[in-house]
Length: 205
Image (tube, rainbow, N blue to C red):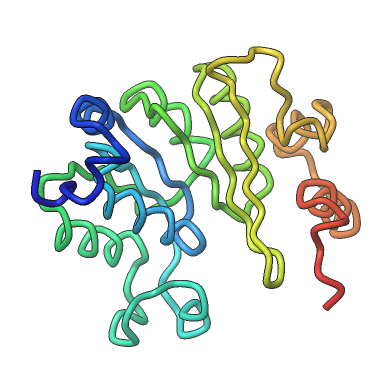
C-alpha cells in the first residue's frame, strides 16, 4: 500500500490487485533491465520470470544501470538482487541459461506468463517466442534500441488471432525457418534485422 500510494490516482486499488496477480516474462536483461525497473517500481506484476545467459560486462553499463562492482556477475543474479531489494514480496523465477528452444515451451506451459517482453538478440529465439506466444494467446512486446532511438513493437496475440509475427515485417515463412534452426548466412541475417527494426528507424551512424 505504501509503495503504490503515489500511483493511486493513476491505478486504482482494484487494478493494482489485478496487476499483482499477473506473471510477466522478461526475456533478455540489457534493454530489458529498464523494463524490470519500471515493473518493480510500479508493482505492475506479482511474479517476474527473467532470463539471460550473459555475464555483465563493463560495456553493458551504457544501458544497464548497475554498479561497476556488478561486472562479472550473471545478469539474472544481479537482476534478482535488484528486485529483492526493492520488492521482497515479488516472486521471481530465474532462468540463468537464457531463452532456448528447450525451455520456451516449458516456461509457457509451467508458468503461464500473462505478458512476454522480448529483449533478446538471437533471431531464432525471437521467432520461437512469437510462435509460442501466438499458440498461448499471450501478448508480446519487443523493446529495441536503435542508436539514440527506441522502438516498441506490440503484438496482441491475446486479442487478435490474425496478428502476424513482427507485425508482418518479416514473412511467416522466414519466421518458421528461423524457428526450425535453418542456417541463415550473415547477409540474410542482416536483411532480416533491418526488416525487424525498420529501415526508417536505423540511425545513419
